[in-house]
Amino acid sequence: MARARWSVLVTVLLLGLATPVGAAAPTWGTAQRVALPAGATGLSQGYLPSISCPDVGDCAATGIYVDGAGDNVGMVVNEVSGHWRVASAIVAPANAASVPSLTPYWISCPSVGNCAVVGSYLDGSGNTDAFAVNEVNGAWRPATTIVLPGDAATQGQNSLLRSVNCSAPGACSAIGTYFDATSPVARTLGMTVNEVNGVWGVAQSVALPAGTNMTPLVSLSNLACASAGNCAATGSYLDANNVTRGLLVTETAGVWGAATTLLEPANASAYALAQVSSLDCPAAGTCSAIGTYETADGHAAGFTLDERGGRWQRAVMMRLPVASNVNPHVFFYGFAGVACASAGNCATGGQYRDANGTYQAFLVSEVRGVWRNATRVALPAGASAGHNGGVVALTCPALGACRAGAAYLDAHGNYQALLLSETGSVWRAQTVSLPAGATSVGVAGGVYAIDCVAPNRCVAAGSYLAGATTYMGFTVATR
Image (cartoon, rainbow, N blue to C red; front, side):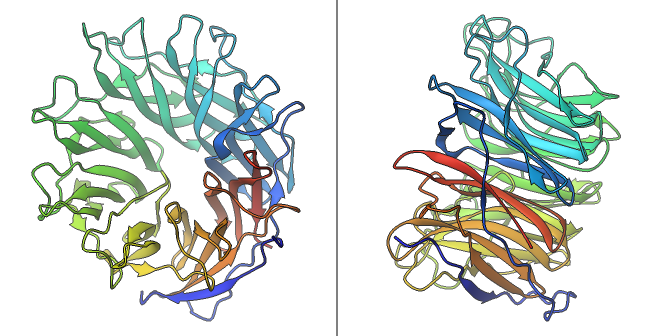
C-alpha cells in the first residue's frame, strides 16, 4: 500500500470561544522513528505512553522496548535542542531481579534536563515494587524504590506508581497503589508520595470513604496539579455492596486529604460501575474530569465532572453526537483524555457507538464552565473509526487551541493515526505521515501522548507497525 498521505478535514464545533477562527492551525511534519538501544527489536506492544516538553526542542518520553533476549526493558528518550537522542534503558534499583520487567507509566519534566518517571519493577524476592527515577541536569540517575506505607505487605507485594506531576526540579507528587498486610487476602489500597528537595518521601495510604468493601480494590491512576502541593487524584474502589465507585482525593498545600466518593449522574444505576478516566486542574481547587458509568437502563455512558472552589460537584451525563446508539458504549482510552486551557474551558474525547452500531470517535468541549454537546470526528473518505478508533490524548495550550490524537481504519482496513488541531471553533485533522516504508500504526499503535509549549509548538509520541508484528516508536512535531 502507498505510504499514508496527508488528509486535511474539518469538523465544526459550536463553541463560541474567544480565539479568532481565522488563526492558522498548526501543520504537523513527518513522523520520525525513535532510535532504540543496540540489540533492541522493537517496542513492547507499541508502548510509548507519555511525553513531557518543558521547552521548544527539549522533550522526554518513556516506554518499553524488547531487547535481544526478548525481555521487556523500561526506557527513556530525550530530545535535546531539537534532536532526539538514542533511547536508554532505565537503571533498575539495586534489589531488582535479573530480569526486572521495569514498567514506566508516566513522565513529568518541569524544566529542561530535569524530569521524573514513575512505575513498577520486579525485585529479587518476587515482589512488584513501585519506583521513581529522576533526570537531574540532563543526566538520568538509577531508579529509587519507593518506601511503602507502614501497613504494606513485605511479601507478595504488588505496588506501583501510576502518575507523577512535578512543579519544579526535585518537587513532585505521585500516586499509585499497593498491597497491605491483611491476611489471608491482602487489600489493594491507594497511596500518595511526594518528592521534596530531590528526596522521595515515605508513601502515605489514602484514607478511604466510610462503607468500603473489606477488599476495596482501589485503583488510583489519574493525577493533576495546579501548582506545587495543590493536586487532585482520581480512581475507583469497591464499596460495601461490592459496587465500583469513583474515588476523589485532593492535596492542599502539600497535604493529601481523605478520599471522597464521586457523586454519580442522577440517572446512574444503583450498580453504576463508575470509573474516573482522566482529569486536569488548571487552578487550585478547580478541576475537570471525565469517566464512564452504567445508567439505570443498563447503558454504558460517559460523564463529566467539575471541582469548583475546592468542592466536587455531581457528575453530569455526557451528551453524545446526534444519532448515537441507545447504548453508546462510551469508552475512554487514555490517561490524558481531558485537558483544560483555563478554569472551565476544557476538551475531551473518546469513542462511542452510533445508531448503526459502528464505532466512532468524538470530541466535546467545556466552555465557561458548561459542557457542550459532543461532536463526531470527521474522517477521510472511506474510513471508519473501528474498535480502537477513539480520541486518546489531548492537550490545551491556549483557549480554543486544543490538540488531540486519535486513530481510524482507512479504506484498506489499516489503522492510521490522526492529529486533531482546534482553532477557535474549528477542528482540523491531519493523518500522521509515518516513517518511510510504514503503512499502518497497527491495532496497538497510534498517538498516545501530546505536549505543547505553545499552540503551534507541539510534539506527539506514539508507535507504528514496522513489520508483521513489530512495533516501533515515533515522534512528530509541528513545523
